[in-house]
Image (cartoon, rainbow, N blue to C red; front, side, top):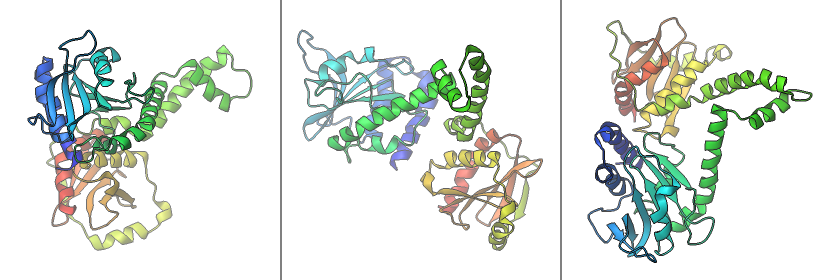
Amino acid sequence: MEFNERLTVLAAKIRQQSKSISTEEATKTAFVMPFIQTVLGYDVFDPTEVVPEYICDVGTKKGEKIDYAILKSGQIQILVECKKIGEPLSINHASQLFRYFHVTTARISILTNGQVYKFFTDLDAPNKMDEKPFLELDLLNIDEHLVPELAKLTKSSFDVESIISAAGELKYIGQLKRELATQLATPTDEFLRFFVSRVHDGVITARIREQFAPLLDKAIAQFTSDLVNDRLKSAIAGVPLQASPSAQIEIVDESSDEQLQDDDIARIVTTEEEQEGFFIVKSIIRQIVDPTRVVHRDTQSYFGILLDDNNRKPVCRLHFNRAQKYVGILDHEKKETRYPISKLDDIYGLSETLITATKLVV
């Protein structure tokens, strides 16, 4: 399996089984060991690669164990400390990692509850583990920007110097993104003042702040809706949608598609709903194709979603320019089945059908 697919498979397992896990040991067996084995590529049953319950006496601390030590070429490279699934992770849970980090050859430490993985190194002071992680991965909300960096930690690609050199940028980008998310969700007075000062001439009094606070909230809401973050996060957990018995099936004349795209281009308007529909479809089929291959072409008749910007590789068509909206999906004979939807979230219910259609043109 490809690296992304291995992450997706493990995420599905967590989603299905996490409610049945009630102990730290069960978390390690069900989720952490598969992460080390299938995602990072280390053999958890080979003691020359993975040592469970690793002991390294530190000062007066004798016989204390760390959950896993991962080795490569006989040297400890990664230390892993585990907590129970669902348990919040804080720096207070990492005391053993702090103690072991400076007395082993490890440059990477991982604190995890099986779902969330926090990766630490020693950016602030040599041989002393940082208090803040340089990378945070939530397997139920995977940030695709972090996947290439995570791949550097795999057995086949492990390059500690490359990891460390990228860690500083990753750390601060992550912190900035979290701060931005906090401000967008609940703007502080300082944040409000910053934006008001850009659009309002004069002194920013309490009355002005009160006047602009709801306006900023509305501006943020409209801006974030364009990013469709919530839709991307919920893509994997879509609710099944049964095909309507009234779904229409028609033969598609491919030879007319190019003409449709060239006709009256100036009159083609791509709507916000079409853009959001595109991102939903893209987030669904990214399980089996590189998301950079997924593109869209708008026409007067429909909004087409394709692979490789190739008109002969259609994934689906969004028919949103009418009262009843449809998602049109083509089969191997180029017959289009139109599935009526009442809201954009209904697209998630077509996930399996979209993936099947995508496999036909991959």
